[in-house]
Image (cartoon, rainbow over all chains, first blue to last red; front, side):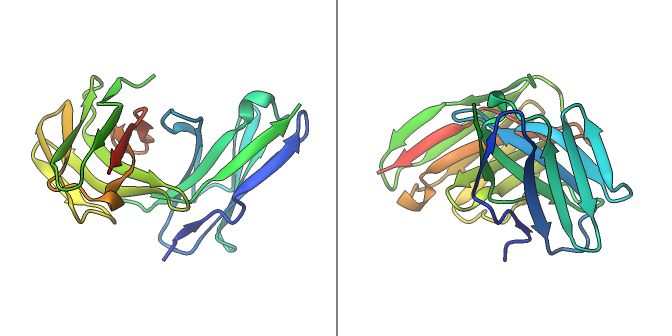
Length: 112
Length: 112
């Protein structure tokens, strides 16, 4: 049973436009969410996180939004740059649990 | 970059042979994790450690064992490798609290 779902395997966006990556979860105990970015032949790199006490967190071009009632989070990248082309994973955990549950990833391609 | 080294980076072996993958960290972090990444599955937790000699199972632990005799080293062993264990294996470390996990660059393991 996939508790964290990324329903779009791939996404293509024009350079300079906004990229929106989506993630849904089913476990209502999840209260901490993260996004990771992964280039080929490298390990995932932490991008941004949000706890359930917030509905938005910003870091430069990256903003994560959390809608707890819908059990949905999204990552916005503005403006998109060619170096943003990568696979993006969302992940979730619950308080006191040291483990993360990952989604299956979305491959983002930025078109120059 | 987080001080995480995985070895070997690539390995090809035969079904039925034992295989050990090593994760070495220089950050003195308490938590260490082993994941496997497969197409359509994202990252799945195999085992993790919350201290020296303290380990626990993840969601795909069958066929794998781990050991942590020193803070800096976390070993993953496939006692008798099978073709279904062909995958890319990632190690991650975490300091604790609300800190995110940081990943190594992975080991590509092929079992023929």
